[in-house]
Length: 290
Image (cartoon, rainbow, N blue to C red; front, side):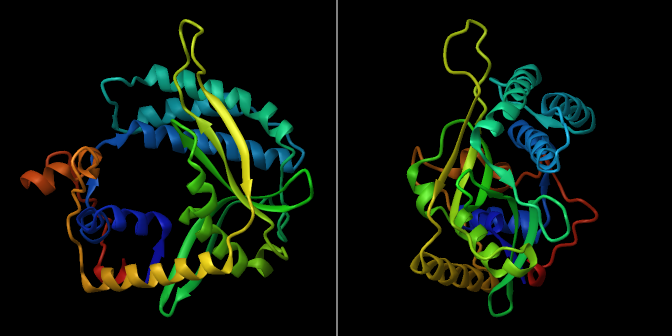
């Protein structure tokens, strides 16, 4: 059985949504504009980081413009009433254009791995509990200006993450577990810092007022303690046990704080309607392989 932070997070948010997505293989016919924007911007910044580590040149703004246009031409994208392709374009170009100067100020350099390639988007696995592999893509393993080894998550968000995300957030905990378990493969001795860089996707102001798009970070913290790592392992064991039991309960939450309003399976769960959903022919998902 193979799991990841995103799978476990979806299960914790709502067991029914997990079942629809990972067991039945259902997918929305439209891709969220926010999701698509994040993927395109992520590629622009990671390509730049790789090029920088190798002493090569790269233009992340041009990359973003090219990939955003290509993605819109190949994907059915869902925009909310307050969103537009043009607004996303302007925000993405502004952030991508600022990224090289930000990267220079950060003092970070992507670590070169044993194979001679920058440690960007490293796919790693570890047996987290007996019979269960934890899988993840670590965005960046870098050296700080102080020469410390850091595991960094590259985020695209509307607002800065709260302190709890930095200090006890489970995604960073999972990344640390993966990095520690693969130290020989990565060619590292230990992780001294964990944290993130945040690209805040505020719209470009037409009046010059407001903050607009902004890059924040690097925001770093000490590595997770043994207590936090042990607690995370126990939690994963518990969640996997529930998944194997088929405990896919709906979780509407509390009034004014429900995940249902933004859920891609809302119509199916509430009204039994498959409108807007599709089951890809290649998605042959079985419970035993979840």
